[in-house]
Image (tube, rainbow, N blue to C red; front, side, top):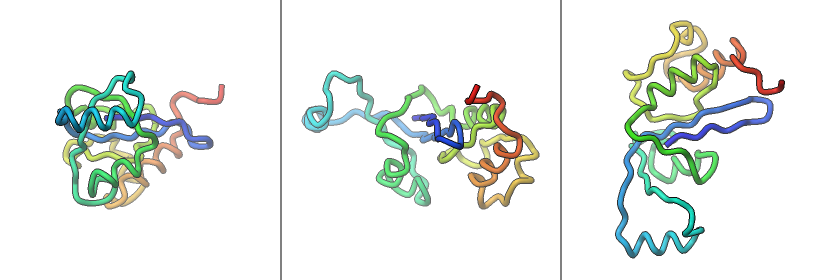
Length: 136
């Protein structure tokens, strides 16, 4: 699941939650759909949890998510999206992509310690500036 938000003063920010689509029991499905607009398309999704940070549990993921919806992609493409975001200089606010699958430009390491990859991502993107300006 992915979401890109436009944050005033920041620009675009990407969120990524890799996981799996799930099928609910028909009674659960009906109950939940009646709490929202049942005419909207719906895919039930569960994120892959890490036990810490934004991905400590499902509640933590949804609490950090910018809205109650996102775009669903087939397959785990989070690593590719992180690389693309780096190329476009869009910071990634949260993700659960395994560290060994993440590829960013080598110079990203010059913007912070490995224990703060999100902060380093924001600093690198701010330093290099947006590839495409949002205020034109």
